[in-house]
Image (cartoon, rainbow, N blue to C red):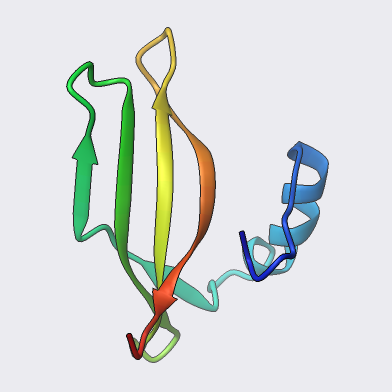
Length: 86
């Protein structure tokens, strides 16, 4: 979902995120602004801004969540939303 550079599977995801998560201070942060759920409450969508280290909005994100049998939530699809300029 990142401009054709999809990451699939636990190993690939961990490898791609390692550089972001290995630093004591992450290079970005994000926050949900909109969260919506289907009527059954087992599928949801969250969107919001991505901030750089200085707090400037540099992008937007979109995540699709699926509720698990134990009640926890896991991301089913995660990808960039529109650019910060849109």
